[in-house]
Image 1 (cartoon, rainbow, N blue to C red):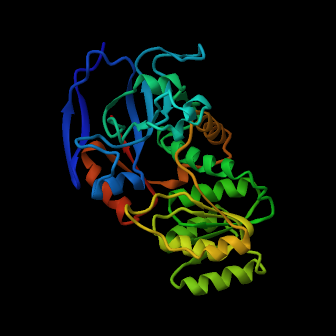
Image 2: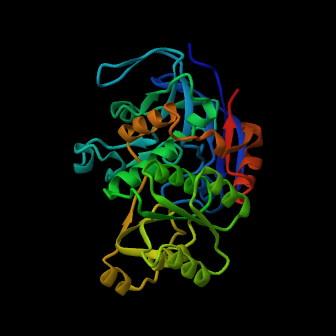
Length: 351
């Protein structure tokens, strides 16, 4: 029997949350009970500025851990029993375009997303569209993974997607991460898995201290970009980074990334940038140093499964990134602490 109401944080427009009970459609075929949903920097940008793919009113939230309310049958004939804890890929692909045909669902030409195009996880319950189920977008998790850390498997999978796309051998090489937030710290953990010598550049001393605790070989407080560049080139014996990840929405980080990148390296724009922002870069840095400038976006259920395995095997620690927990009624507080960089990741728990 379906629940009668769904308590949710509805975003009616910029900076306008309303806590209300939403109706649950009688034809909801895949309804999940939300357990935990983390607040992403993207959510805060949508809250403040809106986004081209978001239409109000909307329930945000795409980093989701939930529980099944009935038995689900997946396309590969696998069964997910009732009362199973799961994570959810936010992708709702069209399943008709070229990219869908080769399994690159995050590159779908007509992509919709949970928490952007349809209601997401800042609610007691979430309705999963059929096309998400058809790509195995609901993934069971092991008992040794908590609800809150499970909600961070989605951003972990996005970071893994970026690393997989580079096809670089970073063992013993320098990897430079610009950004000391939760995403930067996840990239740091992945980098250390590949035994790379990793430098983290950031703006917040407490976060850089955490990066050092995780295993960063060097951390730099970036108050003076010229001094940062000089320090990195000296530390790497002018070799620079084999891989430079821009894990911040600050456009100035792109110029910094190109100046600390080594020859035959990759610079990855992992974070979204402010809308209508045009970057000015020196093309000669790309040309003479043979630097590849790349981007990465989201992930796929297949990569999410690999991310789940890493957490289950304790190779990646997501628990240490969770510093705040709130109820749905406290969502304004959760967004505020995220916006002012207080701590690391905030999660919304549904009870």
